[in-house]
Image 1 (tube, rainbow, N blue to C red):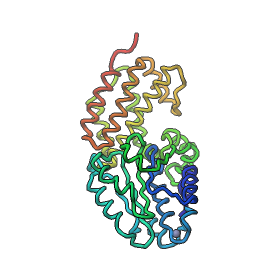
Image 2: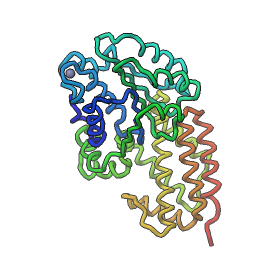
Image 3: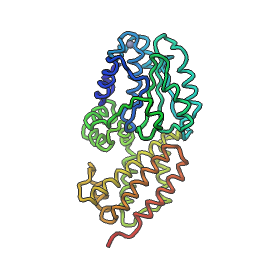
Image 4: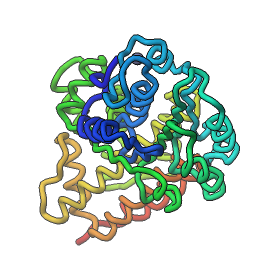
Length: 345
Ligand SMILES: [Zn+2]
């Protein structure tokens, strides 16, 4: 395994290689960028490169066959630590950070260095961040911490100032389409391109959007919002809840499905904004474009702003593990208030 398996982030690989060659590789990195573009996969590959026992650090290229590489690949390397927000928590608990810092301070088991990957730092509260600061500022010699979040603005200044911020871009449509074909998410190139265009550069979102029942549900929801009669909020909550439960019992999978749909709603309302501004909405789907045109005819631009904002708010709350039925009830209540109003004369 090498960097070749990490797609669409050559610029970041080059940046980090330059840092490694200069002999001043940062001891704390904050990866920021949209969800689902491969930051975690990238961090694991970086950890492998840093833990490789064959190649010199300056190359930052895992050999793929030494014991260090093999254990990093299998995520069983004793010096590769990972932490994140537990599924049932709204925040990254201070205990998780304390335990990680304690482990991190121990001598490396294989005699090299320690690498830690901390996921979900968007949800790290001040208390947990404070517990982290000393380790962030002065990690053990050679050790590297990689923090994964969506934006630097969501982190405390005290954390950002101790990290080298590394920005990840959405994956380009061609790169994403190719990856979808390769991994069997799509079988036809046209389908791969359609999914890649809809997914806004996120592999994770493209995989979610590929589910056949999602397409049907998405269509009904969007057409419902655009219809003359508007929506019945209670009915919509029930339907979205049922749709989420089709993902299985696991609450994280259900949340992912709901977030996917909230993202689709936000996209729909963005399209409506384009249309009200007299621009062609960037939607690859003719049925979506029809729904967008109908909504743009009926709604004032300020209403559309409110709708888009409500969808993104709801997404944030679902991500933060707030009680989902309440989030959805309040969302559909607010959407109905706007879309059920009689249209402009
Ligand atoms: Zn190696």
